Image 1 (tube, rainbow, N blue to C red):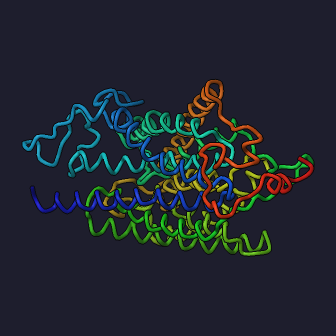
Image 2 (tube, rainbow, N blue to C red; image 1 turned 60 degrees about the vertical axis):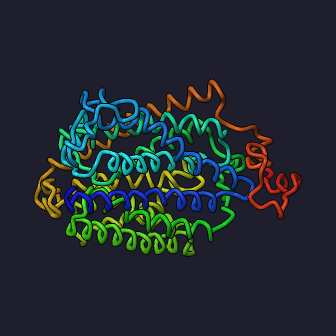
Length: 441
């Protein structure tokens, strides 16, 4: 096997492992933003979701996403990666029934592994948004639906040679495919679940419910920042020095600028530089640059990061105002900035800046052609993901049930759902918990 293929394969596998490591980041961020009494529950969800993704995506999700078939979904190569030519005679370049991957030089299993960790990321986004009141079994069931059907079908549209790819939509590493899909699914779940007990007062007051461990949340955000250097540069599918260097710098620049802009805006609006907003600002910048990291300049990444950090602060306040209770800010980070990042390709793209012929965005003389493709993609991905997710959540609600009892929610899901406590040395008595609930509820 030629040296380039070996190096490309190592690059794809190592960056895929970095993306896998992001599971730790999500677990720490989400558990840190949750209360002590729900810590075991959210850690359990973050741990089991990758196991679910591994099975669901292997069995059918991969084929639906990359198999040849219709512009809507793959119809061949379903069930355990069937139909690919993995013989030595085929070499590193393969097609089989996955012709959308004909440009990839790495072996099929390397590409599968890299895409698998992306599927796991999309499912993990939902976990934090529905935290502190969802049944464990309901989350498990939805995660299977997410990784077997919702994520792969949208992925086929854009990355599997589907109708949006043919329309000319671009999403380099998944602002739309991964982050907005996870965000739309999370929004549907939040609507069906309703807010946590005590979050909103009868008089319209918003009662803050702070997380129990900002140390964990900060470490988790740093882990995610690190993992994103696998997420975005790894999406080149090759150890291309120019491309991976460019993508790494645009990714980091957007994250850094968004961290600063979110901090400044929260300082102005809230009166203090809120650490939670700073952390989510960093993640917002990472999500915002993900679609265009290989298509925009370093200067454009500064602007994208600046707006992403501002957007996440106002988005958090907006979702609270309309009573969509999102304990970790997943809607603001992944949905709002996933949509924004996808749109930015149509605004800031520069043709062949790292070799990909995207055409120029609106701000670089390309007119509205690319922008319209991005807008059509945003609307269609949102409509499909939200609708299918809502149907799945409602079916789960009508069958196994979706929300724990009020008593269990007040006492905490750790004991009720798992029979464990994250901090058993510090036993919180039931009366102590109840007394903390606002009296008007």
